[in-house]
Structures are given as structure tokens and as C-alpha cells.
Length: 79
Image (cartoon, rainbow, N blue to C red; front, side):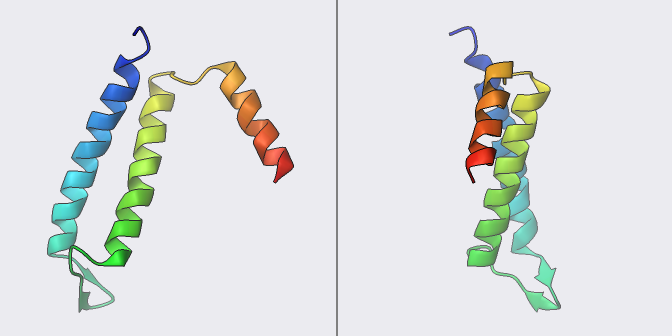
């Protein structure tokens, strides 16, 4: 329960960014073509933005410990 507030804050920040990103795409143009808010391109872009924002907020809040970094490095070495 002690560490639960950090993912909650990260989720809230990510939700706000996704919400405003979604409304931004409703009136956006990409390469002079109108972009529909439900297009696959927008979905992929917003998913990537959400992952980056969520991970960044967790890193800023120091959610990750040294053991987590060792685990990620071992995964990268395997790939």
C-alpha cells in the first residue's frame, strides 16, 4: 500500500495527457490530410505517448529500484 500512490499519480497524469492528445487529434492535420480521431495512426501515437509519459512519471517519482534496473539490463542482454 505504501507504493500504490506513485502508479496512481502516473496513471492520472497519463490519462490527462491522453485526453488532451485525443482532443488535439480531433482537429489535427497530418501531411495536409484531416486526421480522424479514431484512426489507427492516432491510436498508435497516443499509446506510445502514454507509455512514455507513464514511465517518465514513475521514474520522476523514483518508483523504480536498483533491482528493477538490473532486471531490465538482463532482458536487454538476452535480446
